[in-house]
Length: 120
Image (tube, rainbow, N blue to C red):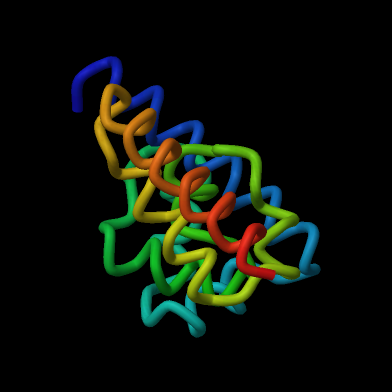
């Protein structure tokens, strides 16, 4: 892994560990929920390796958060509990959009929101 990948792996690991501890889970509890070994969970938490995208999706479900929060720490971890799955999927998809395209997506959403308010 490059230095940047190591840093990212460690950041992901810190978020996984924080969520695991918040839930009161042991490594084995998380491992069972995602179909991996307790050792794998430990390696993610210490940044020695990163979970794959498919595993991150399982981790998000097991730890009651979003893929975007685990992968990027984008700050909406707590919101995941109140928003519908469809809205959270949209947020996760927005996290994958190139930064220059975010403005376009957000502008589109504002236009739709304004139109919906007028129709109400």
